[in-house]
Length: 249
Length: 249
DNA sequence: GTGAATCCGTGTCCGGCGGACACAGTTATT
DNA sequence: AATAACTGTGTCCGCCGGACACGGATTCAC
Image 1 (tube, chains in turn orange, green, yellow, cyan):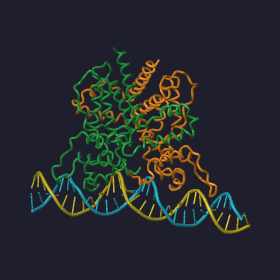
Image 2: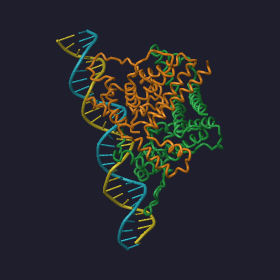
Image 3: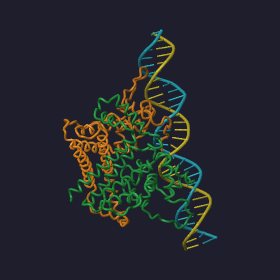
Image 4: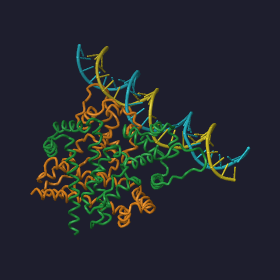
């Protein structure tokens, strides 16, 4: 990779350091010059760059210049780029949607939760790239998870199952966010793909009869297809949960 | 990014070029020296590097040296790194699992399909990073999709719904593959995260009561928890599909 | 009040990255 | 034999993440 990535302290130490950064409190220096930056400002600057030009445009240099500062100054606050991205993720996931009064309607709550999360990914498409692999969760991300798990509080599901349900929903949100990523500014990168894939199927469709049939039978606008996929998956998951809950009662 | 990434021909042209590369046929030069490489060898070399040291270690230089060749030689075969990765993805997804005789048991077929796909992601954890965002699918990837869609052939689902179901399952596979990524060689990067997250919850658990309860109630080994999450999500999705299919009959 | 300890942001340097381009050597056509 | 096409190579560029030494600012102990 481009990363002259420091390779010492791999694994647990790294995660612990990230946790300290995300969960604070930050140690306040007693002596020395005033600090010109703080983690929140740095995170916001990174988010601004990523929102405007994608995660690929986020470099130490770029974020530093956004803050009128040398890139090495950032290293006084953040151990490395990975941690910067972790900060950006938690910053971009805020704020949480307004909290409804806790109702026993777990299904409606989860549906709304997933919808809000999907919008969040839509506002910050780079979140997809920034959240691959096992990561340390920040306070905001954990608060999102808390909402989903809490929505299942009155059900006969076990603790592990509630977590699993939240993970399952998150996966669907990610999948759909991915399918619609860059559909906004890119002027329909998705439609382009659709067109190119259509061409491929025209040439090699005989090897993929089921896909070809399904693809052409559903030759609606890509955006509408995306909405349908979202609703379809969401309802399938919620139906599956309902089946289990009904079994337990 | 590190990529001095060429920024011309964005979007459709790029996708079309990738499609030509993935779907062939490759134009055979009439004159000139014999070619020492071919796309399959290049893809294999890339996969070998990624398997051994992760996608981050895959650079033109690294892949070229693996083939005893200068990096610029690769550019005679591949327009850029993105296309190289696309080739690697399709190469790593092969071979498909052996084809059973088509049975009407869509549920069992889909479960087996998802399981095979999960194993595929387990063998090549870097596939997760390599398959974010809207991409061009290669022949092998499309063949995987074909299998899933074909499994639903006898059902009352529409074409669009069959595609949506496959997408839904793929999302769950990705989520779980992600949770278990690097759990092998890293000696349990996942267990480390589990431990660190436990520490965080010990300090800030009062702000996340539902998660804390669920987390500690399910204080089993991370690996077992992962298996449970897999089965849970898979069965929820299949139950959801079954509900819909039953409604239609 | 003053010296020392501490921490700030900067400048410079490194190896590695993706990619452009000119070049000499090899090959099939004419 | 001349030519046109194509090969892999070497060199160059700007950018990346990161290490490290430095001078100036700030605050503490005395």
